[in-house]
Image (cartoon, rainbow, N blue to C red; front, top):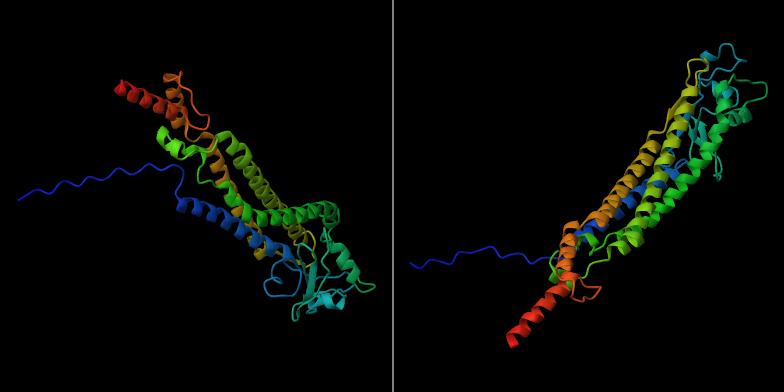
Length: 330
């Protein structure tokens, strides 16, 4: 019985650069990160601007004054909704552009007009709505913190809006940072480099990888700093209102939905920055072994002229082949 010839696994053809599917997935992942971040940042920006589903429940801070104790009412604890008796609403909640107010049994009754560089001033709001003759002993810490809150709110407003614009732009621009022929895919085989020319490393890094690295870093920085400022500022507000040093029976709670939205956006911009950082490092440091081999070939064949766009080893190889052919002819 004749033996069948043994099957040997054919050597795979060397490829230069990345496969089309790999390039496509790299681009999709980066765009997807910024798409998700942009969606959540938009929810942060439009939160609390109107009495609409989802929007009405997206706020930074909610203050409950339903059972606040005014100085002019000695038995105020026995009243069900004390806030109405002195001209206040039961609750106030704060967004990026405005505040909304309402009653516990009716919900939100009014939202203030959205305003650029809005900052929450609870003292002004409460004093403007108090009936004549009604007084409340507001914590002294509130008035001292308002100046800092105003500056922090302006920074938070500008950072959130800038981060939203940048993430929207990067949805479409971030795929351009992914190349099908990055410089780190240079091969030690001159034939592959001649057939599939590689990017010039310095040109790619300084005109493509590095600018995108800076842009993604600024976007992540703005988003994270805005989230930190918002979280710290409204945590301070909540702690001051609910402090046990003042027996005012004021409730305050952070908007968990708003906090979740802005920190999810921060996480995805950070992930996108890390991906770009890895890509930039690979562009700078990748392909060292292949370049070392090409330089070695250049030292071994220094007398051969070569095309600057073709690696030295390729031109040297071609020259040696020509010499061999000439020798055979002779």
